[in-house]
Amino acid sequence: MARLTRSQAQLLLHNKFVVILGDSIQRTVYKDLVLFLQTDHCLTNAQLRSKGDESFAGDVLVEGGKMSNGTEYREARQFHGPAHLLRFYFITRVYSAYMESVLADFQAELQPDILIVNSCVWDISRYGSNAIWEYRQNLRRFFSRLNEVLLPECLVIWNMAMPLGDKLKGGFLIPELQHLDATLRCDVIEANFYSAVLADAHGFDVLDLHYRFRFQLQHRAQDGIHWNHLVHRCITRMLLLHIADAWGVALSDGPLHVGPVPCARDVNRLRGFEAQFGRPVDAHWGPAGNDLVMRHRQTRNWILAPYGRPCYRPGPC
Image 1 (cartoon, rainbow, N blue to C red):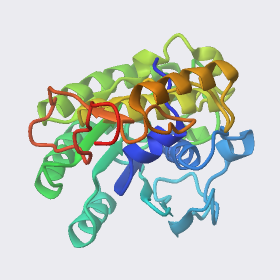
Image 2: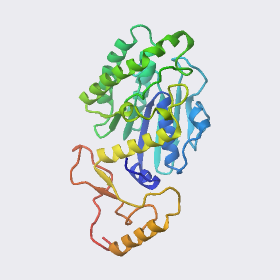
Image 3: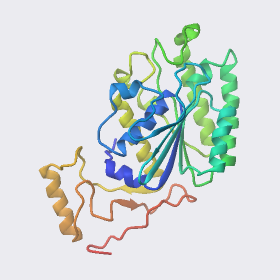
Image 4: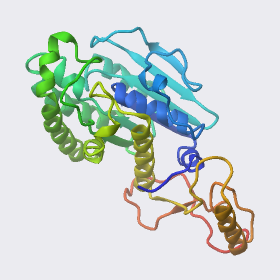
């Protein structure tokens, strides 16, 4: 997978409102994205496990956070940086009265530029014997409501649920439902297929995380549900690269390294860029002002990427 620097991520999401909806996996997706916009460090084990924190990496707990494993658990978080706005809502069902309140927030306040969402495991395990059938109906209602509420410029990405282990413990799977761990991983595969087809039918993007990490099970936590920091940083990069592709933005081939100081080979590469373009070059990017190059072919005609087409001539444009 292509590398992506923090500076590229900052510019890609500059002045963008990103909303993430989902369970504890999506909460960690939110956390890693917040962290990646500020530092090159990955999440620690404590940060991976924590929930309901009053503050994480400069964000604030807006709602809920009271410890509970029930379906009524609520947690809304928001990170407001100098040029970035990210918000997370914890949901246990893809469509509900609470989801309607979230959609009402979008209608009454700022509309998101990017909506990243998944809801699956809670839906098909915690809502009775008809949970899978109700999940299908709720997916239809949810996707239809998104089309009604969101602006057509909003990029909606449906994250497919991650692979579950043979034995599950803790989290959403309360002792009364422990018998489900024998079949739940197969139910998730079926639910993933249905939700992905339905999301695509409504014109939304689908990111198949289940397929991507099906052979990376050594990075899954011992509870059979959650994943380590390496996987979540990989998910963050996958999402950002997908967003860049959806907006028709090509990331420049700048030096690929971690940390503020480039290696000698990268410094020489940068000097070559300087000679070619006749202007200073940032250590993390390529030629100044030519970091993100608009593609000639737009994958979405109705979306205008927030960057002007750069000048390709050497020297100042």
